[in-house]
Length: 507
Ligand code: ADP
Image (cartoon, rainbow, N blue to C red; front, top):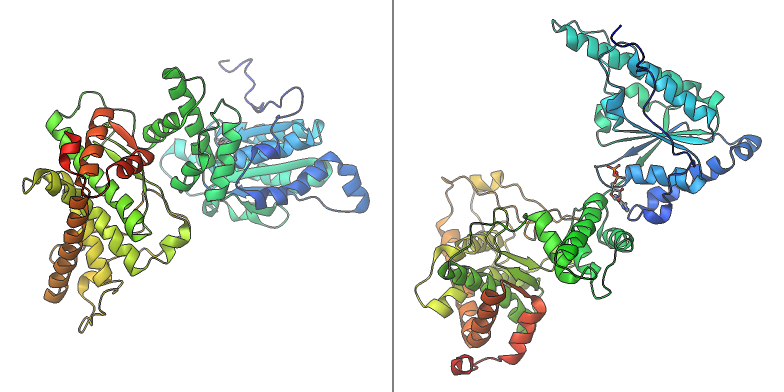
């Protein structure tokens, strides 16, 4: 017999011998409400008899629901760790086998072992793999293998339901499961008496991200000079897993560079690696290309610094610029995000300042190269026109404009992404940059006024950069020679090359 000697029915979950996962709630951050709710399970696991005596029924099953990497497994382990009880973990997919009866046998085995070693915790990750909605009457398909697999999964799910229903006899065992697709789950599983608790594990907000970074930073050697708040603020949408990976990556970079501990530039490098990719070898720009690239990027960055300095503009300041090609991009400007509220209630002056920032790329080219401008700044120009059009039309923030008759057809097509509490992706995500269809009939008036607005803002930006041409030139030179420059360095240059510095100072 081919299968002789192989016991398929045993679940692969092995609790650690010492009965503890070693994970504590202090290892978890950013999901305080969930942790608060789960404390009760720990109290129960520590003393199930007491709950019995008083007559409190422990929850049957707890469903942790949320996107990947936000700490579902971690928090489940922490429950077992805090209570000091064995932890039996399996993934839903491990129950799904084509061999008849194997899945349900594994379920039985898992619950049996957890009961023998009670109090204990069972955790099934990605339960959706095993507990997708049953088909009801078994649909006949011509694919025999498909039929067998579906039937087998349903048998396994039935076994799970039986175990959950018979839980009263197995007091002292807490059953936890995780999913990011609750909509796929079989409704029978969600009925009262099965999962009576459903807890959402949400992606962390800015404060949560900072706390998570602190936890992971404490596990490596990180220099005190590293300001973690920059990263929590600048990486919206990042999960705990991604933040943990960031710290690991930074540690690797530090080792590679021979640093004693992780410094700020290692963290920056790690962010770039995880977002745009590692340095791309083989597409080094020539000197000419590098100069253009550095000029446009510096134009954008320095415009934001100048506007903040002299006009108290509420625009993002530049954290750093890199002209190292990575992944798909030749260069990157990283801006420091403002607080979320600033984005929610952006006002006209703020938006006009941002328009100027976009236009800074082309204006810097004009300051340095005269009319010999290039395509290097064309993307920023496109961003600028789009923003100007939105200021005039959708937001109607310039002299209110009556748009006659029906709203223009493209207006209906534009998906207006309103302010969001947590932003995903890059800085300008909250502007939906979907282009309206090319054949849209933009009112002549809108076209004329867009041009007027862009031109006006461009002239202002150009005049400002001309006054500060010495600082601009110096900063571009530094960027080209170092390939990277920080926001502080830009500020330092601005301090030392005040407006109208004669260009001869530089030569
Ligand atoms: P999930 O089960 O939700 O997919 P995990 O719990 O497996 O996510 O997270 C993977 C790793 O990411 C964890 O081991 C931990 O290092 C880190 N992590 C995720 N979320 C958090 C969090 N909220 N606090 C601290 N670390 C976290």
